[in-house]
Image (cartoon, rainbow, N blue to C red):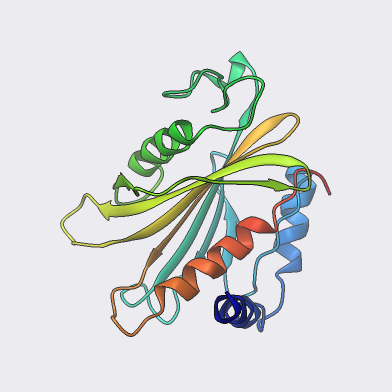
Length: 201
């Protein structure tokens, strides 16, 4: 436990050496009224669908990609029916988000939101339940695989956070094919970004 805690501190402190991208944080806060801290080494953008996209593909996309896609779904029927969910926002009313809904959301989004569609394979582990400043959340994990001609794959964590007016979904995935890369370290860094999310400023 001590070694794991020390490694987590080491991994997360390294990611903030470049500093926080305050300009991007301000743009997200102004548009959505949320808080999200991202290191300067990530490229942040809001796409035409209103999704938040974060990407760090240094030193090159062939060697490593760290990606986070964030989507907001309003609570209520106007959001449309979410697969495998009792509520339209990926939740079972009135509780926290449910694991099946998060996997279903990830599968749906991974087929349509990326340049190369991804297949989603759930991991046989218990979902992680947590609260972010009082907002209930659930996180699942698994393996993604490109459905194109290039045999790319890697780990992902997907999370749903239930805010008062909407449910926020996060898809964080890693491509790190070299054996010497510490996938555990990079996944901890992705989770550090997810943990910085707050529904309200």
